[in-house]
Length: 174
Image (cartoon, rainbow, N blue to C red; front, side):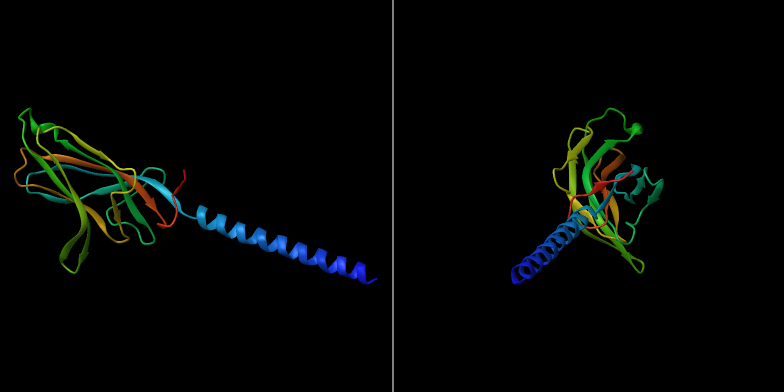
């Protein structure tokens, strides 16, 4: 009888351990898969030399647009294109753009992290990054500033992801 009782207790303990192991791995899977990602394109056309503009971002899958990154999300910038505006003509010269993570407090707009794109021959400049080049926080926005010495106006296009957290790679949704 003691042997049967011991086997029963060991069997019950084994089942409890299996259930706990399952729950641990199940929770890890949910955390890793819990990051929802949406492909985003942000645009601003015809930024004149010396001009500063906020970019309009579009989520085609959800059919929504935004300037400020929605609460609870981040915008990961993965690709940037600076294109001479169609009215630019053929003259060669400087195209120099600064791209910032910006926010407004009261009546003042502040620029935080950012980077610059510079092209000396008035050609389209494209940057593609293996990891996000810029992470824009919730309630912040992308801001482009065209250098005053630019030969002509520019169009700025940014591709990236709107994600719910920065811990894991995004899961693409439709």
